Length: 433
Figure: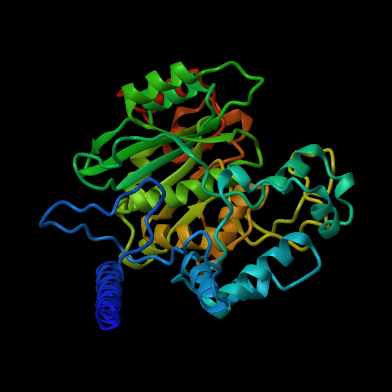
């Protein structure tokens, strides 16, 4: 009887051992099957269609409860930093030596990072980029409390990039291909009349003499909460004309720089085949045929490095706190590099890619045309002065002279009614100049 019990115990132990072995083999097989798959997000499933396994891209994702090793954390962080394949010119570095002003300190932090790894720290998410802790700003800008409110708001938002897009044209082509000339016009939501005057005159899209195509896009921010809601009207306008590019940030003088930064990136993604870009305000008068003639006559080398307008040089910050262009000494020290006045200037489409990258490296600056001049200076490109650009207007005695306007390319500024009258006048067959 004892022998029988012993035999049964041995059989039972053998069965348990066999079960354990089979269980471990199944677990190992399952682990091997999913070894190359990434952790799934909550609510997802491992059930692949029969006979059709789903491929999932490799990422650096970590399970929520798994603490990353220092090496993996460093690799994950590095993978989020965009690589900049652009060189900052020596002239730019000499013009902007390190000093104690806040903008200079920010610039040289970015330059050191770029020099080490050709990367730049990506901006925080749009909803989290505002500096809410004023003590941080007061620590870095000793006289922050004396800044005007406009400047304080700028400093709180100066690290914000990549604003959400509200509206964009379906495409940036003209007659099925990249435009020869892209007219990028800074506007504001309420400026309906100005935009329509441009569409009916110098911003008319199509193919001009010589087969040169023109595409027009209006660059807008959004109205503030205290302004009337113009969204339904803008939606209709954008649908009808397909020329409105609008982001979700409030229109203000100092946010024009953010508008340029966003425009550079959008254009490089969506309109990189543009041969030339004209940037101007919606209250300028532009002689589009004269611009096209000028551009068509350019040789390839100067055309590829074009940055032309009414050049402001030498230029220095305005230190009068009552001026809307006031720049505090603790924020920026030194002069400005030569730059083209923001009322209207031309630059080569060949610069778009590098501008889209460099604008991430150079800290935003309150004055938009100065900021663009800084970015182009960093490329090693100098602005070219041209008498056809009159962004500070012509002599008062010539403001009604059609022959004067016919010889110029850009004049700032004119009302919508004046724009229509001038456009009709310079194209009148009765005009003899």
